[in-house]
Image 1 (tube, rainbow, N blue to C red):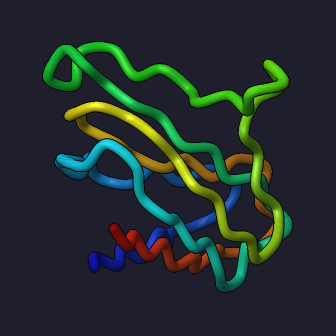
Image 2 (tube, one colour):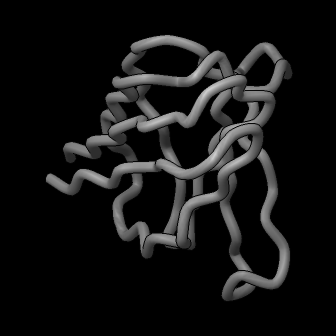
Length: 97
């Protein structure tokens, strides 16, 4: 289990990339979103290009409140971006295999 805290001054915050080695994990997003929207991004080219994850419906995976999601990815780098916050966000992301 790994927990990362995404925090910083509003309106936009991007986390440091994290090496993700599992194929499917449970992600818990909780804390103060500062009125912003969190997205999850993955890079399969060592951090050159980050791609925003989408739901199976094709809509972007956008998180604005405490939520839990099961995410299936291969080995990659992941990072989190919070946009549009009106106050400083402090969101915890806990990953459990």
